[in-house]
Picture 1 (tube, rainbow, N blue to C red):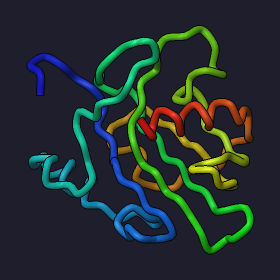
Picture 2 (picture 1 turned 90 degrees about the vertical axis):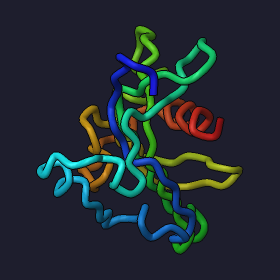
Picture 3 (picture 1 turned 90 degrees about the horizontal axis):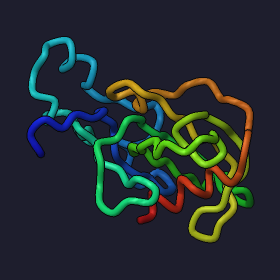
Length: 153
């Protein structure tokens, strides 16, 4: 870690069709217990602090300022699911439609050529992508596609 660099801590994991139970909901982590005990956060499974993310128009990784959780069910087969927990960085553009971290939303999206129905949820406190939160209205499929492009890089 670079001295003097600070960023948000997020859970980072993926699960396709339930292949990583530790990443699925309900999400069970010892994050709150360890946080209360003020122990070493590196002991928490799938937790990265600081979490590093890409920034639009820049090369390299930067300390993230938001956590992201994407959860979806395949449109033509509800038994096929995806859960992605990661971090992201507000790149400073003027509009929310190009910044995945500024608004949570639900709707349809494509991932790896497959159509899914689900939600993208963002938050800005350490470890906040650990638990399910309420669904927000679907605002823009473009935002979700943008997020998936950044996650796949």
